[in-house]
Image 1 (cartoon, rainbow, N blue to C red):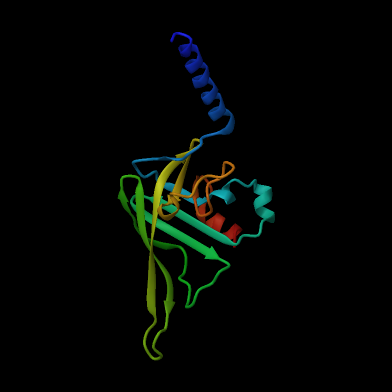
Image 2 (image 1 turned 180 degrees about the horizontal axis):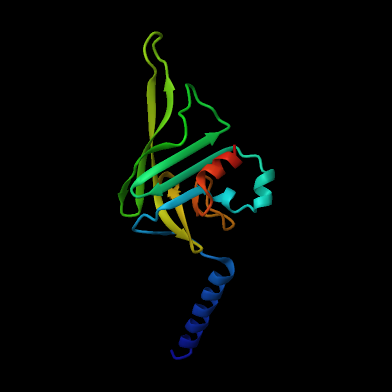
Length: 171
């Protein structure tokens, strides 16, 4: 029985060393919103030089400040209708560490002679911490695992970069 104690201790040390060597296995949900600017994780992990030469298929930026949001979105996949002018603005709702915003996705004329109809979608993110960094993780992707130390696409990483500069650079 006493021989199992050193074995458990060695196992504990080994697991701790593995976590340190290979990084955090899973993101940890936070119970409060951390305001700031967030941009796509994979874009924020590029160096400045890599960003200059990159071709972007999607740009997503969220700025949270004093209970308000500014939101930018661009994609090579275009829908019907006229895209809104970015940034979109409004107030966000926070329930613990989950934020919800309503964003206009398009204006579309359904009946000729009638004014265009606006279409909206609800975006929800869970504020998470992963490898010491704060993320906005889309609630709909919460079950998607981290692969090779990288969160799935559409996860946003908190950045110190200016949102207008990100939008201009990735345009």
